[in-house]
Length: 182
Image 1: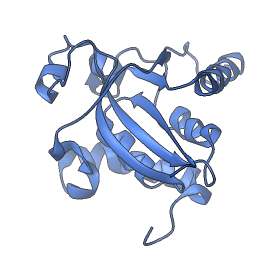
Image 2: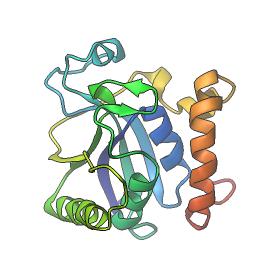
Image 3: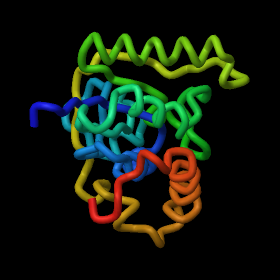
Image 4: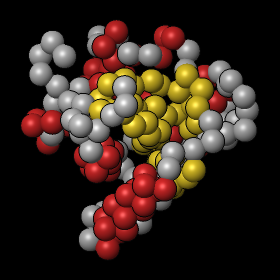
C-alpha cells in the first residue's frame, strides 16, 4: 500500500492502545510490541523486569487517504494521561511510559507541535512528560498479546480497565470509528 504510514505509540498497557486503534477508521493494522530499548527480541517477562529500556507500544499502520497523522495523535493525547511518568493508572513501571517514536521529520514536527499546543493550553494540571523520540527498533510482542482485548473481553483487566476506556473513546471519537464489518 503506497498510502500507508507507520508510527509507534506508547501510552501505557499495549492492550489498551491496541483495542482503541483497532476501532479507528483508516487504521490498517495494529501490532502490540516493545520499542525504545537496548535488548534485542525481548520477552514480555524481560520487559516487565524493567531492565530492557523498552516500552510497551503499538505499531500503528494507517491509510493516509482515510485518516491523518493529526487524527492519530488526537486520539493518542485524549486516551491516556501524558502527565504521569512511567505509569498509566495502576500499571506502573518504565515500560508504561508515554512515548511517541517518530519515523520521519514530518511525524516529529507534528508530534512536537501538538505537545507544545497542549502544554500552552494547559490541557492538564501537571506538565506533559511524553517523550518524542526517533524510532530505532520495534519487536512484536508474543502472539497471546496480539488482539488481546477482542480475544479476552471477559477477563478482569479487559472488563474493568480497557472496557471503560473504550466506552469513553467511542463517545468522543464516534465519527472516526470503523463501520460494522470493516
